[in-house]
Amino acid sequence: MRRVYLDHGATSFPKAPGVAAAMAAFLDEAAGSPGRGGHRFAVAATRVVEDARERVAGLLGGDPDRTILGPGATFFLNALLLGMLREGNRVVVSALEHNSVMRPLRHLARERGVRVRVVEAEDPWGVPAPEEMAAAVAEEPTRLVVVTHASNVTGEVLPVAAIARAVAPVPVVVDGAQGAGSVPFDFGASGAAAYVASGHKGLLGPTGIGVLLVDEALARDLPPLVRGGTGSRSESEEMPAFLPDRLEAGTPNTVGAVGLGAACTWLAERTVEAVAAHELALVRRAAERLAALPRVRLHGWRENRPRTGLLSFTVEGLDVGELAARLDRVHGLAMRVGLHCAPAAHRRIGTFPSGTIRAGFGPFNVPADADLLADAVAEELR
Image (cartoon, one colour):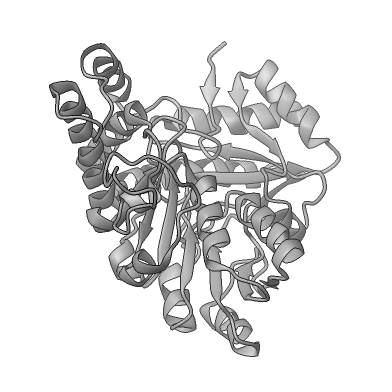
């Protein structure tokens, strides 16, 4: 049986060419502690971290001086929300947010009285128009707007730059976990105050590392979520005031940075535009064939809309969990099933509480993989 990986919304597999080799070479040859010494191993480790910082900043349109590396997108979303929202503040979010946004916000609502305004867009798949976000902001004084770059349920890309313009001067935080590396994005031109990304999804790097891009205003004001050693200003028991050190406490995930840098190198050479076009062609191929099958419903698929390589579907009369298990066991298709850690999005699109089956195409999938998915669903229907 041919095994096909279609779960790139959860994590990419395989990783970009060169990632594993670069990580292995670093561990074998130069795994010093970055910024913690002047010997050649420490210097080599520092160089690979700074190289990764520059490569990911270049890929996403950020400034390397305001590009922070850390444990992942969830960590940075918590750092932003806990650091920016004070007692009684108001925050406006879309109805498509992941639990990495909603759980910290619900915590802050209980602990600090933060008020959360969810914009239930008129769009059938929950994508908010810039005017709708601006209207919600105008209702009451608002501290922050949070929007996902791309829905991890439907794959649709949100108009984050237009939203940032519409709600200005309220700062916008963008959860780019599903967008980074999968669709072109220029942070500097977006008008967003912060952009958070996972290293292991569309950026095709390892798990355990992510990136935070911040604008100049936020770079001055954002407090650290974690405090500790930085390798700089060791004479002081206070965190350094400058970036990236202020937001990068503790020994960094250097080997993860090596992998992320290698992945960004591959993406820059291949181009994100080419990856996006490849994944869109696969989604379109699968969507057209699945839509022709009886009882199959696609959730969030629309032509001529910006999107990632995700495609969610259900089959009337069939339990999504049982069907996904058969597609894996009988047909060799590895896909995510359920609520995808985004219950708010499923409530908005009408698939709560069962959720959907989510096919996630990546840069190394081929047209035959889309055909196998459609053929397998057709066989199960028969």
